[in-house]
Image 1 (tube, rainbow, N blue to C red):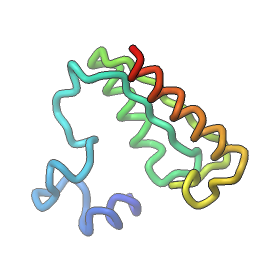
Image 2 (spheres, one colour):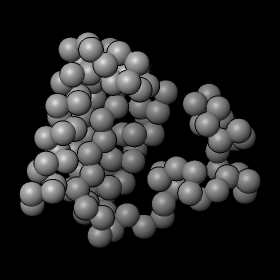
Image 3 (cartoon, rainbow, N blue to C red):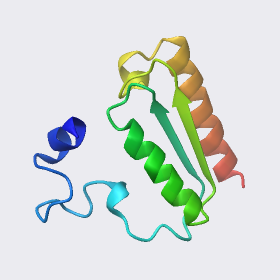
Length: 102
């Protein structure tokens, strides 16, 4: 909850929140392309990321959810030279190439 309040400037789910503030607010996920969600186990949005992946799967969207042990929010930016970040970046690049060549 802290992460959402910090990002939105108010409680999530209220009328003041723009539907474009976060993809989690989308009501219809059908017909979307492959979705990759990479999230650290210590990320403030871990639970929301798991829930979002479940929604994609239920909508029939090919979805990959990867959890990175010991990683925090934006770990790939703030700790870019670590092993976990390098693995994450390589994985993201692989996913993009796979989607573009599909």
